[in-house]
Image (cartoon, rainbow, N blue to C red; front, side, top):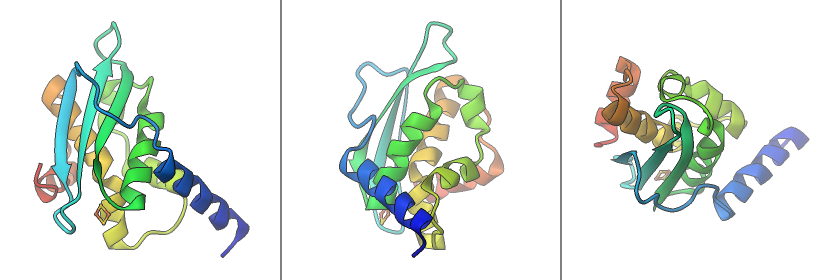
Length: 144
Ligand code: FES
């Protein structure tokens, strides 16, 4: 394993052990719950918007799942804070995968983007942001 890959693995482990944004937000302006049908693991996302009603002020999550799903959702909370609902609606999964930094098998990929898919659905429900076909398929897949 390269030094860089080792570093990414340590960051993932740290997010798994000390998840950022862990816990429900009550009240929340947007929320959704999704399940990875491959394993049954679930993630619920909570979003609070700032005064403009568009900028994501805070994101929280609850759920259970493998290290990749939990670490990726933790990283996601840091990635999207301060961005608008529309920006996050069009955020490509590659941006999150870049943060994760290590190659993932197709099964692990589903784990990694579970939180992002649920977040996009939450924003779609609350703000009517577009849910492109790619994510619509994921949403169906996630049995949200
Ligand atoms: Fe269930 Fe990864 S094994 S989300």
